[in-house]
Length: 196
Image (cartoon, rainbow, N blue to C red):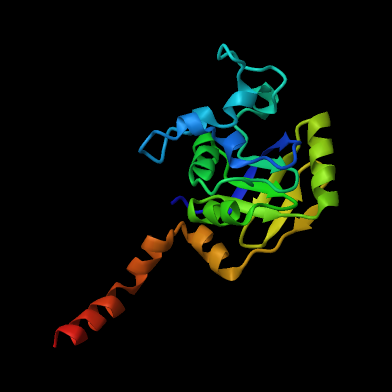
């Protein structure tokens, strides 16, 4: 995984509650066996009409948010099924950070395992970020090491919490398998003891 240290980007405001994993990546796109290529299907039925034309009213089709790597949404983001394809689609599209007042537990865990930083913020803070970023593009700088989000427009600093384990994994770009490789010497020593 690619490490996350500082992410500076325009914020994409997805002002919707209870966005479930089927809305993030619809079931008809789950036949792929790779973990990549799902970004083009992210929020597919909101992004495109039945003829496959871009919906001009959907936020991801607004040119001012093009290239954004920070997504903000409302409460209960990632609810529904436990499909890991949802964070795959979000990451493949280009988002590295998701801000919301709350996430579904399995989705939240899957984000960390796939190199996405999900940040829980108070509802009042999310409401303000969603509202302000719909008036004009809002650039944020997310510093994982310092656990802060800085608004570039007014310099306001928003702290956030993250557990030490998840923070270390993202800062180093480790998944659970790559973390295991850091213990190769101890594993080899254990296996030698078993063999003797």
